[in-house]
Image 1 (cartoon, rainbow over the protein chains, first blue to last red):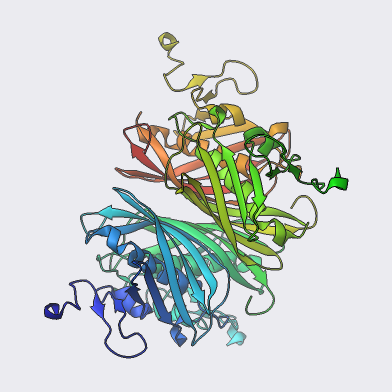
Image 2 (cartoon, rainbow over the protein chains, first blue to last red):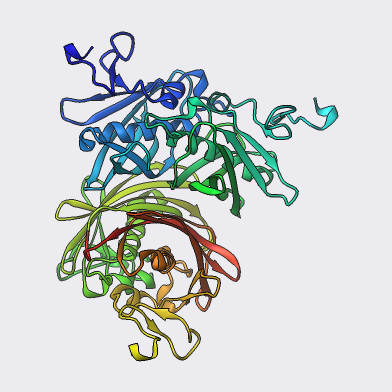
Amino acid sequence: MPEDGTETPRTRLVTEGEFAGWRYWPGDAFEVHTGPFYFRAEDDRSTRTAFRVASHHINGGGAVHGGCFMTFADYSLFAIAEAALQGGRGVTISMSGEFVGPAFEGDLIEGSGEITKAGRSLIFVRGTLSRKGEPVYTYSGVIKRISAPHI
Amino acid sequence: MPEDGTETPRTRLVTEGEFAGWRYWPGDAFEVHTGPFYFRAEDDRSTRTAFRVASHHINGGGAVHGGCFMTFADYSLFAIAEAALQGGRGVTISMSGEFVGPAFEGDLIEGSGEITKAGRSLIFVRGTLSRKGEPVYTYSGVIKRISAPHI
Amino acid sequence: MPEDGTETPRTRLVTEGEFAGWRYWPGDAFEVHTGPFYFRAEDDRSTRTAFRVASHHINGGGAVHGGCFMTFADYSLFAIAEAALQGGRGVTISMSGEFVGPAFEGDLIEGSGEITKAGRSLIFVRGTLSRKGEPVYTYSGVIKRISAPHI
Amino acid sequence: MPEDGTETPRTRLVTEGEFAGWRYWPGDAFEVHTGPFYFRAEDDRSTRTAFRVASHHINGGGAVHGGCFMTFADYSLFAIAEAALQGGRGVTISMSGEFVGPAFEGDLIEGSGEITKAGRSLIFVRGTLSRKGEPVYTYSGVIKRISAPHI
């Protein structure tokens, strides 16, 4: 629906439910499969991301799987960097993080972060995933701008 | 089925198909959902992990999603550390890695790695995910031994 | 000189020069040799660290050496964690970071950061080194509490 | 002394003492100040690095300072990447690592490692610092090729 300004070729707007007003990337199969994950640009130009923990996000110990947090952090990395990418593509070249607290089914996980440097070839991002206002995963990542779809 | 030695309370043996002879953890919902991922103890006491890239592992650029590699690396972390955990539980406290090459639908991704230190409270692991013998993701992670299921 | 409250067995107060009012650890040979580095507890209970770039901090390209930033970040890690350590000792078990900008001889480098989790055995810290208000190095690290001086 | 082939504009050969036959970069003030650190190309085209722990490398707990290991690892990063840099310059953009064991004054620290990918703009390196054949620090880093001396 490009006519109403709510859609771009790459993102889609959620129109109902808990995440009405948030966006996602429908063309990313792994994110659609592991999510659903959402992002939203705030009035202060910051970006927020969020998801609701479902039963398929849980590990063998009953908490959110580390891979789920890392996948959502990688998603958040691109949500945060989206303006800096200016419509161009990017690939993650490195990412590191610390698991500082658990989360459980039914929890709302919220992501925030910042670009620490947007260079000509590399974009550096740092972020936090939180549950009830307390950090559960802290991370940093580096995105390389690319023109072609793959490195 | 403990009577035939092929099952433990936590792992299950694959008996047919491409990964016959490999094991997995059926009790981990996120890994079952994002995988299937497999591991196998080799005769030389090393551990190998593997998965076949399916359509749900792919990102918006047509390659394996970074979150998929990180999830499989976190899975591999525990496969490599399993003997050192001696039946006890562990949680990942940190993980970092570099995306050094792409992979595509249909590829076989193989994981190898090593324990660099198994201490009383922490286990340090380093590993590599490869495609056709070339690294696609290199990582290191730290596991904390725990007695209870959650930190 | 414990009678005047300005000394503890482990830290010493600077009484003159640019860093008057700041503290350092005189018993750490590597930090004394590579620094001098300083820290100060602020009224808001945050911790600041700082050093002035000298000629011996410079690499072959004319900028501050990455090893200097990492050493000062490791120093900052313990300055930030000092209250949480409650007089106990700790060792760094992992640290990662990104070099997001250069700095040069004569620059003032300032460090800030936060504890993201202080657990019973592990303390997680994240910080930023800045030059003229812009980040030059962002990092995170994990400290393990220990009772004995070495692991 | 370019006439005898043992010197290049950037490296210098050690001709006597414990590290006779090894090289270093005399133009890097921080490395000269914190070292001395050495590197050597082996017949199998791998690169080894080494240093002997002196009193100025020690932290307040009596062991080698983490900043010393990280500085030597950053040094080793460039020693390992030297052939791939083909005479061009590079800067470290990120580095992460784990401290898996202590080392003490008098110890010989040896470094080994490998390039996991040498791309057009980025070089990925992974390495290990060891003491008596056991790892004390494991790390990975990313170098960005640059033409000018600074980013």
